[in-house]
Image (tube, rainbow, N blue to C red):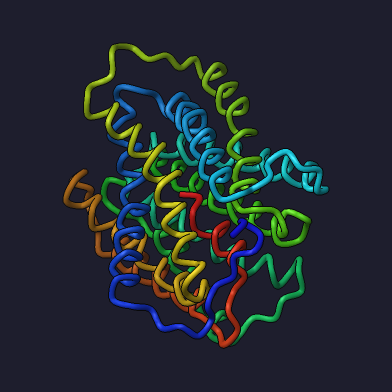
Length: 317
């Protein structure tokens, strides 16, 4: 079956195995920002992001080719793909550079405000109608971000707040690329091709950013850093993408997407135990608001989401 022919089963309930696999994927995506932070002492963030994109591109090409995706077919997606790729590249400049300044626990919460911007943008740009629960979710997420950034907290200075805002900006650009995919012919492209545009465009953008920031690799990376780079490139971008698509082919994409609200929760907990991030009461309350809002925004409606939309919304971690 080709990439463009796969359709989800809207009514099929999630099996215990599917639920366990989704929990594993969310745990992976929640840990990703921690992986970036752990590698920064050996490989600066822009170089790290460049290497990740360079390694992920052939992985996507191999996966797409095995699934019958036609990467070089003229299908009218080039302009939209390049524009989405431009935003994708800038998005990761903001996210990876923001991780220099803000803890991973804060970054994962702010990054996963992206569905907030997708829902708001779908209403403003695409004219999609939002349910009452989604409006409530938007309000809760906004309140959580405002609380996390606006309320004075121990160990949160101007640099941390700058990092927070950069990651929020990255989340907003993540949402913008999703909206471009929904509003253009990218909607009909195989998901590997749609993401391939973005990964390919990000390579020169991130490479230029690394050059402008004067980044160099000061010493031979530790085995841990090399392992985490392989984790980001092969496992996060390549393998979890494939596993997610396999689930989408079998189960309702909207039901699966509802699980993504767990991702920032996993990220916050993992940051506390691995990075020993300080979790203040104010930030804990903010994280709860953001996660609750994300759940309400993503909660499935009676109509199943399109598989391509779900892939674009979830797999870009």
